[in-house]
Amino acid sequence: MSQYPPRIAELSAKPGWAGIDPEADGLGVEAALGCGSIVRFSVGMDDDLGVVTSVRFNSNGCGYMVAAAEALCSRLSGIQLGDLGGLSDGELDSFVTTALGEVPKDRRQCVAVCSSAVRKAFADRRDRRAAAAFGESDLICSCFGVGEGEICGIIERIGTDSVSDVTAECNAGGGCGSCRMLIQELIDSIIEHN
Image (cartoon, rainbow, N blue to C red; front, side, top):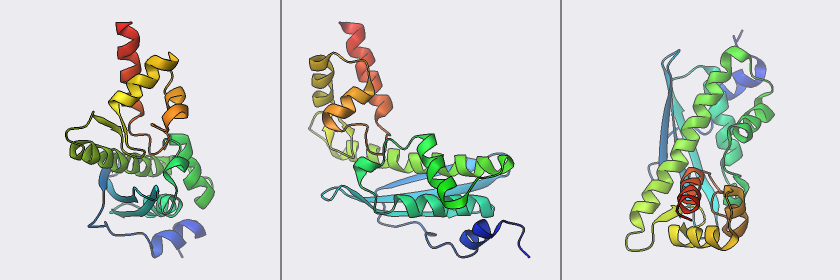
């Protein structure tokens, strides 16, 4: 008899999304310091179609961590970039609880670790794309290919102090969300110098 509830036992016994994609656009890793478990995620995207094409993971974690990783991979695979919604903690937690049901309080760190690793994988992808965009204005949003110049122009044109307003104008920050902090820094800088 399994030590896990049926849905957790089912997903962790035969994970369908296990294994890192060697062609991944981004990689993210996070550790659960309390138990010593690690989870790694890889993400791949098709920029022309604007879709997540590959989300995979590996982990030495417990059944809850593996099941949470499975739930995230299942939900994110094939999703349109515009539907990522910034990958907030609430959104990612919702993906997991929809698939698994309520996660016990003492196992919520498993979900948090997986969510953090997913966000790190998308941030790594953004960093790689920004580094490859040599010669152009600094690439800020890799999901929608929006550079610093365009974002600064929008901030100045509409006079906003909100990342959401920038997202509404050009989609930047509306995908994986790894650029939202950079957009806020641009807003703060422009406000400070005006």
